[in-house]
Image 1: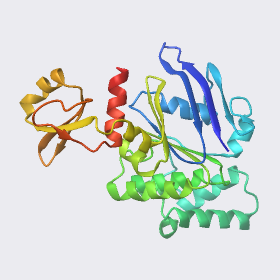
Image 2: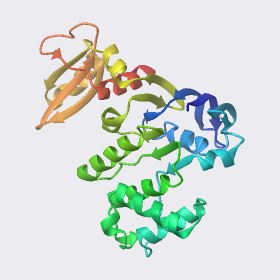
Image 3: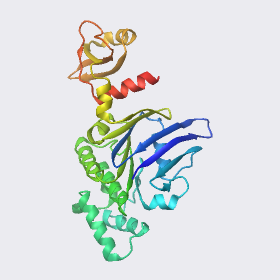
Amino acid sequence: MQLEINDIRKTYPNGVKALDGVSLTIGNGMFGLLGPNGAGKSTLMRSIATLQAVDGGSITAGPIDVLTDHDSVRRMLGYLPQDFGVYPNVSAETLLDHFATLKGIAGASSRRQVVCDLLRRTNLWDIRKKKLGGFSGGMKQRFGIAQALLGDPKLIIVDEPTAGLDPEERNRFLNLLGEIGENVIVILSTHIVEDVSEVCSAMAIISRGRVLLSGKPGDAMDAIRGKTWRKTISKGELDECRQKYNVISMRLSQGRRIIHVYSDERPGDGFESAEADLRDVYFTTLSAAN
């Protein structure tokens, strides 16, 4: 199945143009939608999830018109929004069973089998009786994925799923998403570059409601290979370097400031070639659009 998004437009009543002609083709596997906060990612995710109307354009999932056939979309959709609330005084097992009932999984025996399988798959089996109010952020996100997987969805949307997770929980969550994305469409909407570079085989960068780049992360990195340079500088040199060079990023490493500069040729003394990564692609793309 392919998700075809064509010329989607959305302007809010306050005049903010959230989506400005967004077009994407998304196939099976992990797809990363990368962009800064306020780029329009959540608006696009809500539109695909049938939770918000758009002003124009079309979205199809195989033969299904996403913008008009909401019931068909919801039967094939698993959705983990950015703000996922839970009932704090209910156990994971009980609430997941409740969600399974709402999803239309009939029969207590069949439903219990589905619930047990999902709790094991998301590594929540040992704490299935624990009340959700006592869950860590990572546990709640794994529970969110468990409910999103109810009904064997063919399209899964996760919006900013790793924000606030500690490194161990983040790795566990991304590994789980990677396993899920082998046979279905999984859209990972995030502002965290590393999430996309680690698990996504295809991606798009969006900013101010427009798609700036789409394709495979490896191809995007190849496009700037040999044009990314780095130099260690002092704090006082940063403003001067920004005026003199096309500085795409600055990062701290062991207390040192390292700038990355985009240039067809070596910018000057002290610069050495840097192996381009997705972070460089991201900042170069955003810089070129501003």
